[in-house]
Length: 78
Figure (cartoon, rainbow, N blue to C red):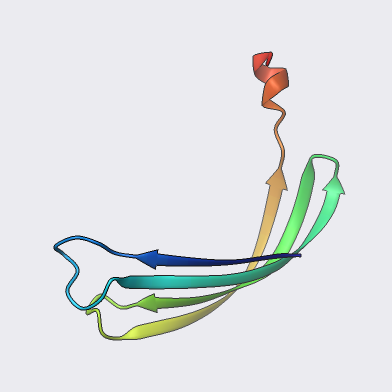
């Protein structure tokens, strides 16, 4: 099982209302399909600031990801 929370902030002169941009909270379950490959199904709850800097929206997303591990040491002779 995997869980993450990413929080994004904006900085600089272009920021008008607040520095908070978005938050992505996610959880997923992995399944190893091969020694170098796994599949993950998950859920992302995204809270994002609209362009006006005042309003926010909330998005719910179901994800399906495939991860593959490449042995770079074999390719480059490390």
